[in-house]
Picture 1: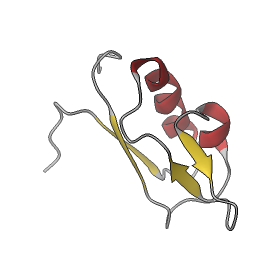
Picture 2: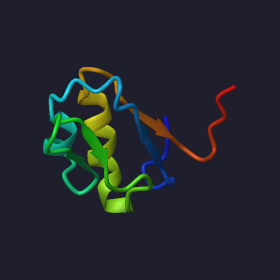
Picture 3: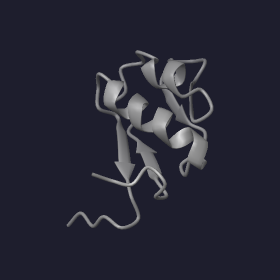
Length: 77
């Protein structure tokens, strides 16, 4: 399990986004939706410590799995 104090990097896949808006509702300081298509807009790829829990929750709630969480210590090959 990752340490909630550990820096977190986010990325989004707008091609995968369904525009449900759960991310913007759950973590409005980190995510928004564009006005044209309602797709995710990542406001802060490296959220502040006080925003990390909401960002993690938003990623978990995304029905399209369009949000990726990446901790600096993790290595995906």
